Image (cartoon, rainbow, N blue to C red; front, top):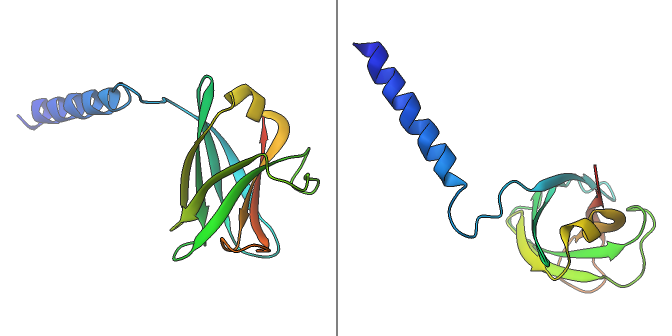
Length: 138
């Protein structure tokens, strides 16, 4: 008698999981890239892109940034070590380690290898960079 109940529970759980990604407006599975620490900050995490042409939703999760607001920006450049001086896109501030934004750019453009997501130690001007994620196609 226990086996049929276990099968029923497993079937219900798999149905719930399958329907969780099928609601209207769900961006589906995103493209995830890592974010490495800069300036010995200890902050690392992920940058996930969800393409919805002509826009891209960007979710940044940084561990070690909890409890304070930090600026997040996208810069052009071939790597985190070689960035242009002005940001291309300003994303929503990181709050408790999370930033969610939508930019007017296709996902393929952002994954061209010419963009980097940079996190800064605060929202004040002149804040130092604490983490960076290079965006590239796989």
